[in-house]
Every structure is written in structure tokens, then in C-alpha cells.
Image (tube, rainbow, N blue to C red; front, side, top):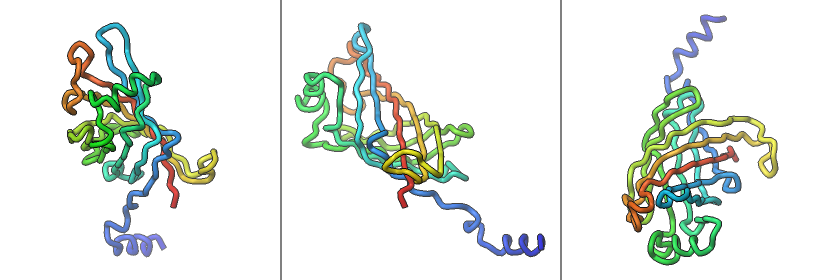
Length: 195
């Protein structure tokens, strides 16, 4: 019997033995991009984007074959202070939600660095400029039976990542270097297999 099973496995094409990446849809209610920067040495200022869309094509057996795409509305920026939101989004000094209403990220490669970690390289398009960035990513959780509504019983995955951006690379360099040109990103995503 064992010989028959081995013969059947050898007769299959190699690609048939490998599972294809599975689609996980980003849950906008539990996914955020938090950013922070040094304010002239006096304090650290924080803001966030939330409520965005995206998908993770996740290959559990071969994570390097996975991919991620995300689309974030520029207007989704929130700093906790309305005057700062106005300056960042509506003043024209930084982001331009009319000409560039969406921020996008699309992975171009994944380097697995550990059982639950990887470096995700991708193209970030922000403020009309596309630059390559690298996310230091971690798989936080992977379950077949998500316990919370409205996704009860769905397969789910949780990811986190960090990265550093140079804001002047994206034509957002006003007040640099007095206010730090480096912006730290802290990303957290939940994604569900809906099909």
C-alpha cells in the first residue's frame, strides 16, 4: 500500500503538491498604521490611519510566496487634534487628499527571517511619489475558527510590522530637519479568509 501511495505522489505534478496562497481580507475595524516622529526634541507626536482596505495572499507552507496589498484613504489620517489634522490633510502643506486621495502599498518580495518573521519589500505610493520600503513583519496569530462577531468561525490571521520612512522622500519635508525627517511606522493588521 505504501508503494502505491508513493507512486501516486510521484505521478502528480510538483505544483500540485504545493498549496496555493489563500486570500485573507483585511478587517478595517482592527487594522491600523500608527506613525510617530520627534518634535524638535521636545516630544514624540503620534497619529494614525485606520479603516483601510487590503488583502493578504498568504501561503502558510511557503511564506515567501505570499503577498500583501493595502489601500488607505488620505482623509483617514487622525492625530487626536483637529487643528493638526487640518494642517496635515487640508492645508496643502503636507498631504493633498484631492490630487492624491489614496495611499497604497504593494509587496514585491518577501524574505523569510524566522518561523514567524519576514522582511516584506514593497512599493509605497504616498503623496504621488512611489518608493521602495521594507517592513519588518511578524505573524502574530493564525487560527481556523475566529471567535468574535461578525467573523465567527472564519479562518483569520494577525500580522504586525514596523518600518521607518523619510518623509522628505515623499515631498512631505516641511520643517525638516528641525522636526524629524524620520517617521516611525507601527502596523497592526487582522485579516479574514471570507471565502
